[in-house]
Amino acid sequence: MTTDDWEDRTAAAWAGFDDDPEQDPAAFRAVIDALAAELPGDGPRAPFERACAWDSTGHPDRAVPLYREALARGLGEADPYRGRRARIQLASSLRNLGRPQEGVDLLTPELDAPSDELDDAVRATLALCLSSLGRDREGLSLVLEALAAHLPRYRRSMAAYARRLTDAGP
Image 1 (tube, rainbow, N blue to C red):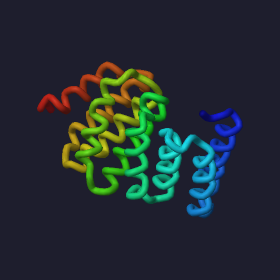
Image 2 (tube, one colour):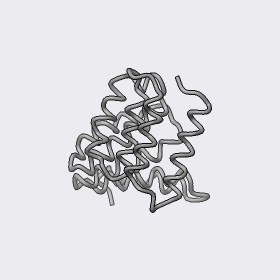
Image 3 (cartoon, helix red, strand yellow):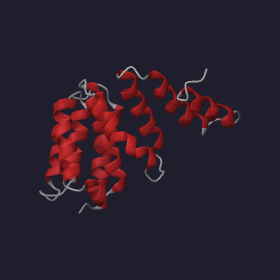
């Protein structure tokens, strides 16, 4: 169980890292690791936090097993939002490691998940995975579909164009 104080300290660590491109990655990971050590040892949150830190400091190879551990420990059930983040970030890391099909397999079910603010991130990451597999039209379709929802005009036409990209049409 986390407290507001723990959440605030974690958010501050991330804000500091995001705002300071010169911050030492190892020092940042040490801060996150210390925060994660305050969490229950058998819970899903600690490996998720560590995975995020490894991933954000350029080590997807170290992040992948931690994301998998967090999900296996029930992160998606305990915290659906962070579970979805873990799947998005895991898929991205897998793509970066040359395993984009695993990312596609992980994110495709997310297209049918309950909608939230991560929908566009799902589509963007899935589009990158598809592109890495040479399936650019499918990826572009997903990106256009996500973009269409944010356009002040042309929503209907862009959504139709997105569908046509995967219907073998022009």
